Image 1 (cartoon, rainbow over the protein chains, first blue to last red):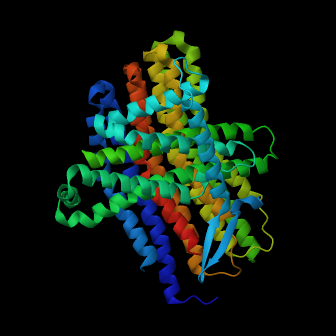
Image 2 (cartoon, chains in turn green, cyan, orange):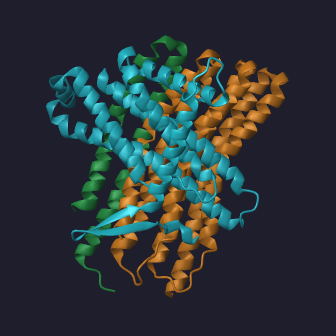
Image 3 (tube, helix red, strand yellow):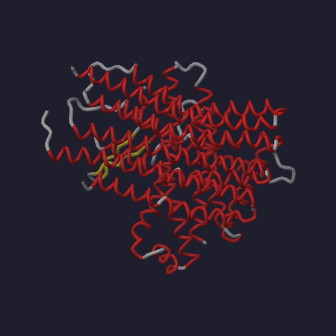
Length: 82
Length: 224
Length: 241
């Protein structure tokens, strides 16, 4: 079995893409869940502000998701560019 | 287990290209649409003061979903976009539930259906955003908080389409594959009906609602 | 060692990883539920039957991801190995990692709403039915990343692989398993946290049930999105072979 240098680079790039997206998904998942939980708690306290609270929750979640999106971008770069 | 990778396809040569049609999905989508049309005619055809059971069901659906839309959007916009939300929810609900019947398959099990519905929601939400806020204010949202965040904001918007459509696809596809594999393992004794109830009815209803709700939320985020 | 022995070794290792990691999450989630139930029973002993019922239902839901891990382990142990290519060993390793790791989050996530439902029944015994329904919806949605992990595992198990050994497909299959596996942990826990807070909010203010179900589902759906990106990357890695 011959293994070329380019093959090794490609193989590790694919493995790296998997690890990047996998580990990158942990933080945003927990963080967004935390935001959603607190928003539910707040809506329970003042149901008449539900629209405002939902929008604030979505904005906060969008910001905490940004690291997940960086991971996605890096994973796609490793998949298709390297 | 042979059914796992099986797709019925119709390939038509067209000026040197091959057009691939996924027959099963097309037929199932048409079946779902015709059932919905018949339901609509039965529910709204003979409107009576004392409604029959089908009319009650229709009124329940429509009033609940109209109230939901008007909660999320304003009164005016809500009236305008509630029919879309109603149609989306009813189509998705019936599509996810139809797999319970033997020999029927969910159209949402194929990625093409959720992806096209997700793209529909994406284009509608951005159209509404441009129309209500004006083009300048719409473009300005992409340069928040700094101007060099623009590419990431665009990727974030596109990732919404991916996440909304793959969520529906993954749940329905995963459920149907789990039912297939477990039925094969236990020789279709005792367990598959419970799995059908969980993955077919419960997960199907929840994912249909989540898809509809997220489309509505994406529209409302663009408006405000 | 010959090829088939490597495949056997990988299938045994994959089965162990799958059921072992899956057991972590299920056990933590069920323990949390049981703890909360006991805590509530200490000051509400007359509600023992109701709380016990909720605890058992919640634990059964938290167990689901563990059962997925068991199913994958069984499939790995008893799948035919004669005449398969050496790449199958890597596919089996990826399948075990994908199912096992992704089940951790879902087990913990399903345990959180079940625990707060027990607590909420102690607070408001009259709305026990509504709390149970909300808990089941929240825990059911929290299972979805385990379902994605199961999907990737099955795709890896039943993939037609070319004969011979090459490093690129081997690493891409292990990468797909790691991607979906780790990617399932965070969203599972996050969805569980959202569902738990929603259940406790309904226990405080039962009139907000409909509103709370809606907000909970939207919050959970958004916190699931990184899990879905993992699914997409894992599917792309599998297409790459």
